[in-house]
Image 1 (cartoon, helix red, strand yellow):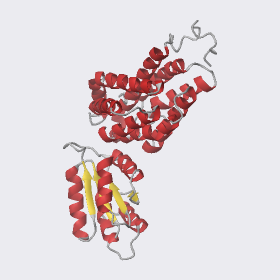
Image 2 (cartoon, one colour):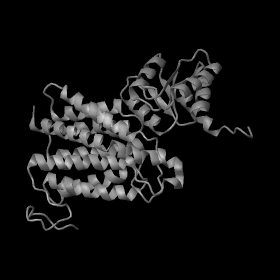
Image 3 (spheres, rainbow over the protein chains, first blue to last red):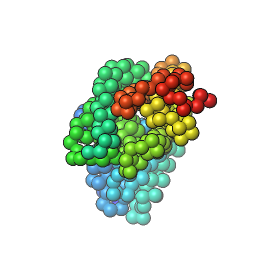
Amino acid sequence: MIGLVVVSHSETAAAGIVEVAAEMATDVRIEPVGGDGSGGIGTVPDDIQDALVAADDGNGVVVLVDLGSAVMNAEVAIETSDVEAAIADGPVLEGAVNAAVAATSPSATLESVREQAEAARDIDKLNG
Amino acid sequence: MSGAAEAAIEAIEAVAERLEAERDHLTDLDSAIGDADHGGNMARGWSKAVTAVADLDDPDVATVVETVGRTLLSEIGGASGPLYGGSIIFASTELEDGLSAESAVAFAETYLEKVQDRGGAAVGDGTMVDALTPAVQTFKKSIEVDDIPPARALAKAVDAAERGVAFTVPIRVSKGRASYLGWRSVGHQDPGATSTLFIIETLSAVAEDRLDVAVESATDATSPTVPDEEPDA
């Protein structure tokens, strides 16, 4: 199964987003990672790498990220990791929910889960 | 240890000292348009880099530089970790055959490319790229076209970086955290461009010292110590 990693500048936010996404898909491995490692706001590539390893069962991991440097640190973590992983370019919470649902499909691939996460960009909250 | 590795370690110590001295200044700049952590992050990251390179056993210059990158990547939070650290790691391979004017240019160019790729910023976006790009281009041209000695080429790069930093003040920032402020970012000097300038300035000072070259002001094209220099275009 495709795993998920949720990267936020806030450890609490990452945990909360995973909590919401896991409601939709209890079997999927979803790892939260966030914070600067000492209780502050930030992201650390080493921590993201550990989360990639924890989320991967050999089939790959889709990474959801919040703001700017989360993207960069996730890119660095993926480049320096052996885990096959891809960042989804979409809203972190809605994307995580979409990705979690998509990952439960028996035919899910890294690409299909990422596409579903990115489809969350088009969710119309008011007129949907 | 090679002379180049020793010089690199000396330069890293000087950069760490400078960034510690500028900690509050950088933090003030960052508190105006960012999250007020740039001064502390840079000072801490480079201080840890000093310790990390001191622990290496007879390293070559590429290993010294790569170790700095790895330390910065782990220790500096925010975007500066991957931008500075990640790019230094990537560019350090250019120094595998040692430090020369040519390999220094290759390092600078590769570093700049990686910073631009990673951050997605171009000149004019109000980021460190605004200081780094003219500095690297000036350094490259000074060495490859004007045949200027490396220490003096670095002094010219400092000059270019200074103008780049000044350029970040009046413009609206369109990349990085400050871009969320929109027009409120106008009138503020970019902290990343500023720390980039401090680092290039320090490297230049160390190069002058180390190479025992009396570097005249970069704008002083008539300097008698560099008779072979072409006048500025």
